[in-house]
Length: 255
Image 1 (cartoon, rainbow, N blue to C red):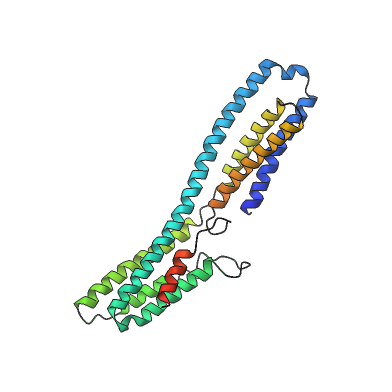
Image 2: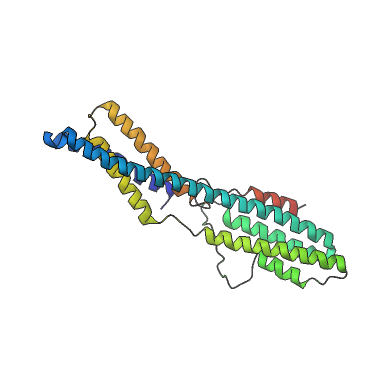
């Protein structure tokens, strides 16, 4: 389910709760709406509002940090790819095949995660995890190099270290991309917000001003849930991880 649909569901639940509260106000007997009843409901609503506000704030912060972490990881990967290419350049013409494999690995990675055809499904995990591919092939070719002197031996060691770092980062990103917001957690949060808006509508007069205010509040809350859900899907949402670092690295490799 996309983050937009989840945001719309949240809006329907929250604003529907507000309208339900206004409707209940019109049919409940007067003794249910006395001042002592209002105080009890307001106390409960304040408790739920505090819980919902804390959870919303924490989730937005966590989702934002997750997105920023992914962007930082790709920025570091782009820098390491350029550094690896420079090390191989210093190694000499014997590393030409490794450089070509590195360029192919980066290009394949970009095409898999940021396909030009938007209808294509993003592929984070390889179809056959047992088969070496991408950076694993680059590392294999690095190991196969035969240094002719101490300088090349040092450069090979440095290149292997960078290649292993890139390979580890790639798998860490793949695994972290599988983490999603638990559905039950989101359902509980929506329940709290719906109950909160029912209580607000229950003791609000039914007029156009109140309905507009409740509508704006419902839109704001649903937008917050949309942001949480969208940022927690860094490769599938609207606010996706940027491909700029890898594209820039590929431009450097193509020179």
